[in-house]
Image: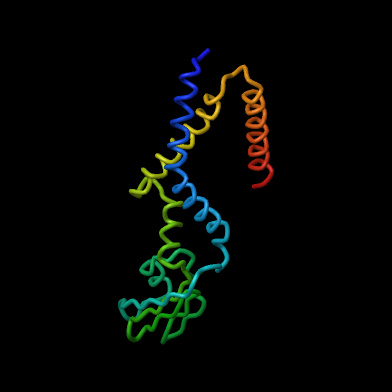
Length: 172
């Protein structure tokens, strides 16, 4: 059995890391809640962008140049190409793109939450994950295993794991 000194040390590290990660957890929580509503236009505003492209492009040739996920040609004639995200004038080569996006600060939060290994933010995500794993382990090392609070903690953690697994299986 580990000494009470070890348990007190883990309590101290758990507390200080908890204070540090509280700020990160707040940002992740807000961006996670925001991502739930990403299919809607909540908190998004319209942004219009003008791009100068080659003249006389067809809709088929235009879409790869725009590089906009989900863009489609809705109508095309000799003068213009209408898109679900804007308009392209074949005579001038001017494309006017209108999209809805988050304000800068919220867009950065979403980018943080969705960071992949190609992003420098990926190190923050990995560090945060390791910190949370430390919390999982240290939560059980904060109490002496013979105490009732430790055994109750194991039961509650088990219920939490089962609820999460059932939610993932049946909720998606």
